[in-house]
Amino acid sequence: MPMAHLQVKNIPDEMHRQLQSCAKRRGTTVRDLVLEAVRRELSHEQFVARLHRRSAVRLGRPAAAFLAEVRTERER
Image (spheres, rainbow, N blue to C red):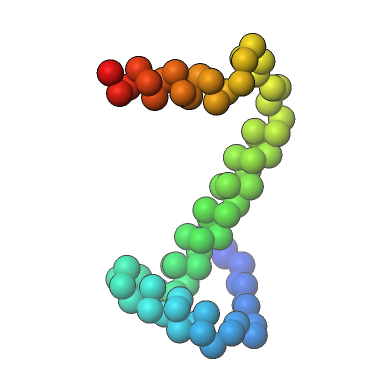
């Protein structure tokens, strides 16, 4: 499968060191770490877009009241 190339320039030194350190801790490469971060961001963006397309749910009372009720039940 053909793959595109992406080059990121002018990364602050401290951020680059953090990326290298994080990749080392996780036993992966900076490339794979960055790809995973991009995948998560794109997935999150798609989730938010789907969420905004949904219609609002009318609960009849504030959601906080439902949460308080569930928490009270859970504590019993």
